[in-house]
Amino acid sequence: MRKIFINQLVKAATKNKKIVLIVGDLGYGIVEPFKKNFPDRFFNAGVAEQSMAGLAAGLALKGFHVFIYSIANFPTFRCAEQIRNDIDYHNLPVTIVSVGSGLGYGNLGYSHHAIQDYALLRSFPNMIIASPSNNQEIEGTMNYLLKNPQPSYLRLDKSLELDCNKKIASINPGKWIFYKNKKNKNLIISTGSVFTNCEKLSVKNNDYDWATLPMWGMKFKNQQIKNLKKYKKVMTVENHLQDGGFGSWLSESLTQKQNKIQTKIVSKFLDKKVIGKVGSENYLNSRYGLK
Image 1 (cartoon, rainbow, N blue to C red):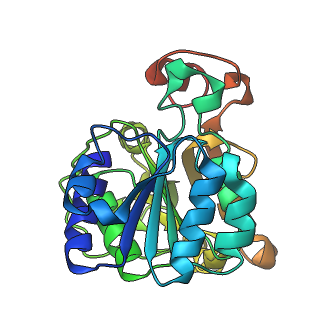
Image 2: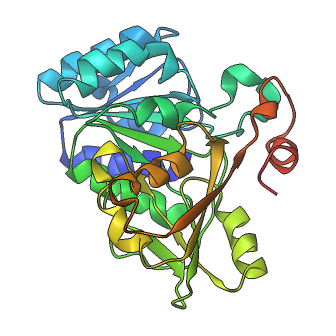
C-alpha cells in the first residue's frame, strides 16, 4: 500500500505543483521517489508532529494540498489539537497519512498500535476517513483525495500488497464496494486492511453478501440507511476497538430511523484485552478478535 501511495502521489505532483509532502523523520525506503523528484516540496519536520501539522495547515492556507506522513498514532494522537483546531475547523486540504493500521506494528507495542484512531478522526465533522483494503481500493481512494482536496485521513496497512483482481470504476465517500452480491438477506461489511479475514468469513458464511466501505466519516451516515435496510443482519469487521470504531459508526447511522428499520448489526473488532500485549500482527489478531 505504501508504494502505491507514493507512486500515485509522485504521478499527481508531476502535474500539480501545489502538492507537498511532509514526513515526521520516518518513511525511509518509501518516500525517496517524491523527495528526489520534488525536493522543494518535500519537508522533514523531524520528531515534532505538532509542528508538522501546524506547518501543513499554514501551507494549506496558501493553497497547497499537503500530505503529512508518519507511523500509526504519531500523525494523529500526538497532534490531535492541531488537527482539530487548524486543519478540520478551517476545512483545509490536508491529508493525514498513517501507516501501520490496527496491529501492523504489533511487535513494537501499544505506542505503535493504531486501534483507537477511527474514534479520534471520525469525531471531526469535516474529516473523511479513507481506509482501503487492497491495491485497487488504495488507487481509488487516492484518485478521489487528489481530485477533492479537503481534511482527510488515509489509513494504510504497513505491508499489505493485495490485488483483489476486481476492476473498481470509482470510489466515493459513503459508497459500498461489493465483492459478493447474491442478494442475500445478510451482509459482511468492513473497512481497512481486514480483506482476507472477510474473504474467509464470506466463504464460511455463504448466506452473506460481502462489501467494503473504503471512505466514510461523520458527513456520510445518512447515506448508509438506504443500503442497510435491504438486509436482515449486517456483520461489521474492523481492526480497531469497538468503542468509536467502524461498527459503532454504522450503528449510529440507524438511530434516526430506529423504529422503521429492523436491520440488526453485529460487530467483529479487537478485544480491549489486546492493550499492553506485544507480538506479531497475525498472533495478536488471532488471539484478540480477527480470526
